[in-house]
Image (cartoon, rainbow, N blue to C red; front, side):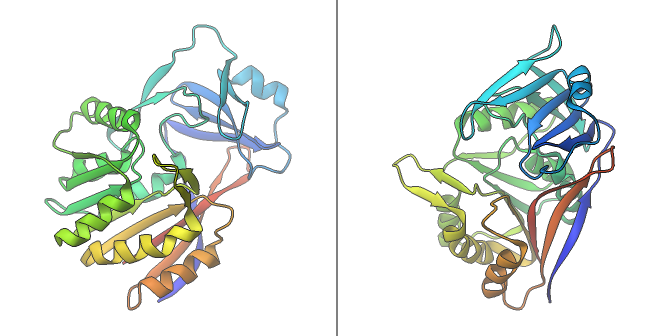
Length: 283
């Protein structure tokens, strides 16, 4: 069975998508309100930007394709702060990129992990970022392997683990695909797998990573790692991979399994709709 659906991620007490428009979004993380670029917010905002600037504590101003600087709009603004996320304590931080430590639209996937991973089951997080999904699974009691190729992100993830009073996550500083391929050779299986591969990147040896070219091997590898009755979640943010493209890739790789692609959206408090990307669920 295969299909495409639209799914709306819900805000929670510590996170609010206040408004969006003009290729920007206005968000609240705990008590801190930020303005960040958002290509999908191509429409007009509900509130004028003058009001945004009055509300916000900081705005990310792009200076290149990905990098930029945070412009402080309020005095005495901390560089980092913590917020509760599904029973965890997660550190957020102003970085040289627009991201600050979590992808709030992933709340739906975090809840799915909570409900579908069990005590002592194996859980694998590839391209794991700051580890919220890893810690969600660990809190349930799963045996968690967390893989990322960026040392600073691994350090951030460990800090989130300690803040959340958890322990015993297996940390792996390595290329996610290469690690997964070695796990296949070792015969290891996982009841739960989540991956958030980048749309584009350059490896340590200058090799190019283009997601639409890598999806077939990623899916083939993940299929071999999935335990019987296990699940796989794949998030894609590439504009070159539509929900239909993702479904077609998955149908070829996961024959006989239930394949669902969801377009992930979120409503603003001002009643706008923002599209974030596509999520694949295989069971």
